[in-house]
Length: 431
Image (cartoon, rainbow, N blue to C red):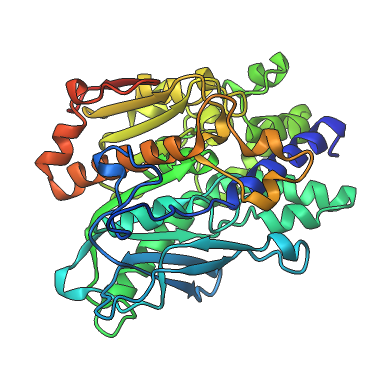
């Protein structure tokens, strides 16, 4: 049964992620509106790239597990049409005044195949999330020459809002737990579908380079990206964590509250769901996809707490970690820090936004910000939101340009001597 503590945690995460979903896109500044950051002092790769951005939704009609999502991509815009879009958050019948989120993309814009194909970024959202979290980052990456594919995982914002009874809340909690193994499979399914889309006769024929692939995610999505890159699950330390009562992440709290009396049975269920052999308490085989060439894990939480030192050692691709220095939602010592310490990658980079909270990459719409009770979930106590977004855009774009394009200038921007930014602690083994 879901007790009061679990209901409170689920409620807080739903509220926090709802605010994160309402991220406004960058506002054009003086000068060329197609090349601007959120602020005039945006670092070089926080400035919007040269490509107009197109947008489309997709549905992979897989017989057993249909997958829905959205794609941002380099487009052509010969007539200079305004890049403007309103994203439908899918809650118009619940909170219509908050359903629409503005962005900067051309709906169904004509793909710029002539300058392609472009590397693929597969994006994973946070726990109980929604498709358009951090849309500003997807738009930004597309403007720099990437195709960004984001899928809706089975743990959804709408499902969380509609869970009012005890039974429904239990179902929401269990979906979050089950998504631990379903999410990496979603990544693989999205990669399979990308090959269809870019193949002859596909909606994006010739646009996507499926031989250059990054997995990117925020929060629970950050943990998902690590699992997709080969991190191996290991539940052996979970009983001790549950007994300690440490609120290490949303997922660990839900697992402890819902299944604390019989964690081996929970793990056995997950193993059956994933179709893997073994016994509870043992190191799992990898759920990853060998097509992934690099990873960006932003403020990872959730699945990170059930990956051991040996499990992280299985990651061998270059990794960029973003860390909130004062993250009390995905506590760094249980999440991003072990991933940084133990990942087997020769090239690891960690960017810490000092004193930032978990929500530093998000920003609420003015409507939500003005609503009593939402303020603390909408803003970081330390970081000015536009500055944080410019830095997120800068580091992620530079890293992916360096790794997937071999861009020497982007790599130079990630050299330690080039990263002298107030409020940023920077560490790298790769630049």
